Length: 205
Image 1: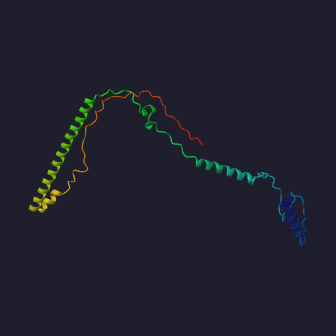
Image 2 (image 1 turned 180 degrees about the horizontal axis):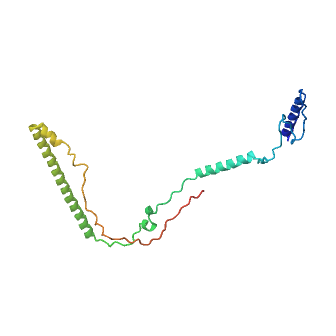
Image 3 (image 1 turned 90 degrees about the vertical axis):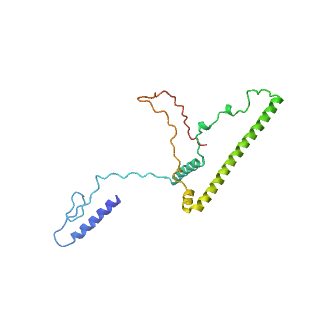
C-alpha cells in the first residue's frame, strides 16, 4: 500500500506541473479509471497472487537437527562391519573332540620288540636305496662332465650346441586322461532342493 500511495502522489505532482504549462488546461482526475493521456497510468495489481507467508526457521533447531545427524553418522562409522561366517570352514564341535572311543588291544613285550626290529631293518633298507640313487646320479653327472670336456676339445661349436638350453622342454604341455564323453541326447534331471541360505543383518551396538 505504501508503494501505491507513493506512486499516486508522484502522478498528482506530475499532473500539477503539466497543468502550469501554457496551453490547453488539463484536468487532474484522482480516480484511477479517468486518467489523463499525459498522466502515468497507475492501477492496483488485481490479478497478482498474495505473497506466501515465510516460515520462521529457528536456527537453533536447524543446528540441533544437523548435530543429531552428524552424531548418527559418527556412531555408524565406529561400529565395525560384521563378517558373515563361512559355514564350509566351520568344523563341528563333535569332530574336535580328541577323546578316543575305541580301546587299543594290549601288545605283548615280544611283539613290541619284533616291531622295533622290523622298523630298524626297514630304515636301513631305505637308507641303502637312497645311497644307491645318489651314487647313480653322481656317476651320471661325472660322466656328463667328462663327455662335455672331451667334446669341447674336439669342437667348440658342438660343445656350445650341447650345453644350449632346449626351449622345447619348457613350458611342458601334455594331454592327460580325459573325462568320459557325455551321452548323446541325455537330459539331466533338475531335482528338488531346499534353500537353507541364512540371511544376516547388521546390528548397531
